[in-house]
Image (cartoon, rainbow, N blue to C red; front, side, top):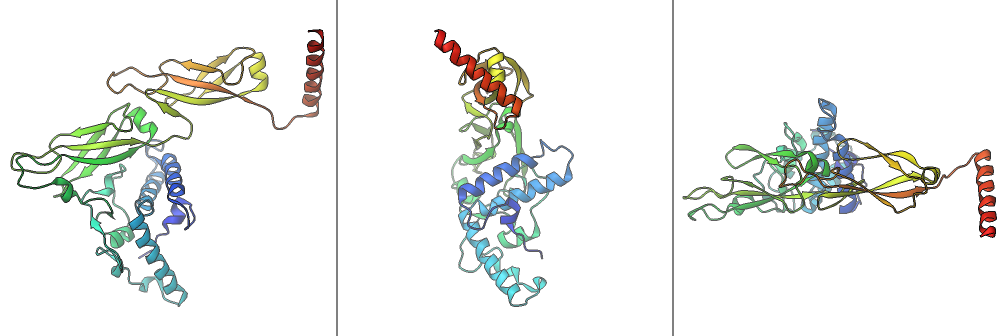
Length: 321
């Protein structure tokens, strides 16, 4: 069986911090997300591979187990052992030497929207579901002798793009029952998606499952309620003379007229270009674009000469005043 180098998959060093691993994962997940790469099988496989790597490196216990496996595997190779001869089975299911792990019976194969399972390497080392520090699904279900089953909360991360367009997550309960949860447009960090009857079982009926949503930070936009904020780089000449500039949005770019003598720090409000309002279908917040004056880093000889002439004119005007 092939050894998988999860650090290489995420493009991080073995000594990378949790923050660096999370940042690398977010960047790659956005790049290869199926919504951005429709009908692209290569991107879909890469997306699954990225999620598998983060399922291991993003959890301290999983990572510790994986690192211990890696040290033993590479030591075995250095001693001349054949990769095919390494005994991966000793690391399977029970947690590997020196480890104690709990089984999670939520099907992680589908947590990120994938349609196929994780690799054989992952399944061998961590079992059919991820073995993490999270409480087991059975524990979360609560006592079976209650009249109604216990409600369950389960954390789900989504991107800002998914919050804008709406998205889904497919989950599998104990016993193999599979169901899809729809996460609505405009979901925020803290939004709870209620799935009736999908929680803990009980004589009086099953409780509910609540997906607790967390929207990941975005590289371009900052969210404040239903509004979005974005920095808008504007060349100094365009700020002085006025121009039309392109403003990014989560739907499609829009053109904005910058009037002459626009100062850095000025904010333009683009109506209804923000986030969908969760409880008001068809309504959107605004996009607040703040001008950031962009000074050229390189000048041609003619440009240098013209700027110098402009400087002289400015000095003369100041003297007259």
